[in-house]
Length: 500
Image (tube, rainbow, N blue to C red):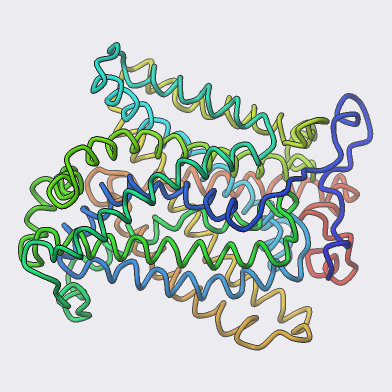
C-alpha cells in the first residue's frame, strides 16, 4: 500500500477534542529516529554498567552476547519491517498482533505494551534521580533525596513531551552525539594502545562463550535493544515512513549491536582477557571509568560521569514518548478514554496522552519516594517487569507476521524469507530468551531465584484487562469493536483477518 492510504490517526467528532485533533505529524528523518531509539538504551549507562555485568557473568567472551542478540534481532527486523511496508498505520505491536491474532488479543497486547513501557519509565526515573543527585553533589551543589532529583527530571520530561516529537528528537540527538563520541574515543584509544596485554582473539571464541553465564549475558544484551521496535510507532511523525522506518530499524539494531560488542571487547582488552572477569566481579561500576582515565584521560572520565546523568535523562524521555503513543493509539480506538487521542492544534503532539503518561508514572514512583525506599529496588523492578513484557511482545509479533501473511497471502515482491522463514527463526530465538527471562526473573528484578515470579502476574492482569475490553466491545459496541487495531476497517481483507 502507498503512504496515501494511511488514515488519520484520530477521528474525533465532538467536544474540545474535535477542535484539537487531526493527526500526529512530524518530519523526523532517519538520523533523528535512530538517535531517539539509541537514547532508549542509554549508551554510556550500558557501557559503564551492563557490559561490566555481562563480563562478570560469561567472562572474556561477553562481546559475543551482543553479536548473537544483533543477529537474532536483525532477523526479527525482516518480518517487522515487512509489516510496516504493508500496514501503513501507527500502532506497532498493537496493530500487528491485532492483524495476526485478532482484535481481542491485539488490545490485550497493547495493554501489555503500555504497562511494560510505563514500568520501564518508572524504573529509569529512579536511576535518573540517583544519577542527577550524584552529579550535583560532585559539583558541590545542594544535597537532596533521590526522589527530589527524579521529580526535577520528571518536570523536564513532561514539558518536552508536550511539544512535537521533533523537539525531543533534537534534545536526544545532541545528548546521543556526546555519548557516542565518548564511547568511540574510549574504544579507539584502548585498541590503538593495545590494552593491558595487546589485542587478542580470545574474547571472540565461541567455545569460551558457552558456559554457565551464557544465558545471563544474553539476557543483558537483548535488554539493551529494547526500544528499537518503536520506530514503527512514530509512523505519522516521520517523513517518507515506508523508507525511513525500515532504514532506521536496521540501522538502530546494527548500531546498537556493533557499538556494544566493540565496547565490550575494548573493555576486556583494557584489563586483559584473563583479568577482566575478576575486575567485573569485584568492581563492575568502576571498570569503564577507570579504564577511560587510564587509556584516554582522567578529565574525559569526569566528563563521562556527567554524561551518565544526561544519558539517563535522554533514556527516560525516549521511553516516555513511546508510552505516550501507546496511550494515544488506544485512546484513538476507544480502548481507553477517547480524550487521550487529542492532538495539540499547534504542536501536533499527543499532549494529553503525554501528560497522562507522566501522571501515571508519577503515581508509580510516589510510594517509593514517600517510603524513602532504595531507588535501586524501583529501578530493578520497573525495568525488569517492563523488559520481560516487551520481550514477550516481540516473540508474539514474530508469530503474528507469519499468521497475517499466511491468511492474506504473500504480497508480490516479498519472499518466503520475509514473511515466513525469518519471522519463525526470530520467534525461536526470542522465545528462548523469554523462557530464560522467566526462569531467571530474579536477574531482571532482583531477589532469590523464583522469589518474585508473582510480579509477572501484573503483566498477565493487563493482558486480561485489554482482552476483556475488546470482548465487551464485541458484544455491546460492535461499531467500536470494528475500529480496534488502528483501524482494520480501512481494508476489507484486513478487517476480515482481525474480525475474531
